[in-house]
Image (cartoon, rainbow, N blue to C red; front, side):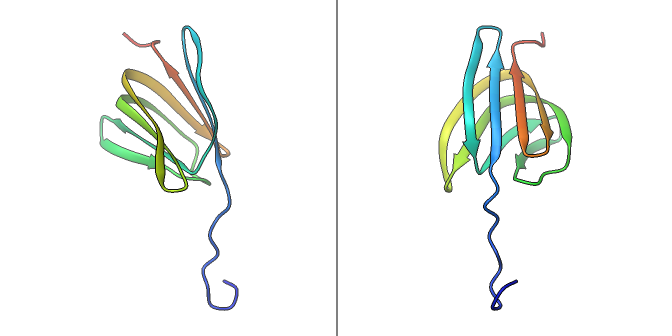
Length: 92
């Protein structure tokens, strides 16, 4: 903390969303949200390494606003070192 103020992280997540047809979204975001068997969850910068089957939808946020909302059936999300890779259409 500097001068008693919390420092806000300037970190961003690099996101790549693909399906069998190619890249659906690629860019930097502040956070993303989805659902797995345990319920809704968020991924923020500096998130621990993580892999999960996801369902329902993916929400991508930049500057506090949803910039993209993708309805999905199922997919796989892998998070490692501020990189989020999401693969759709590979589970039946």
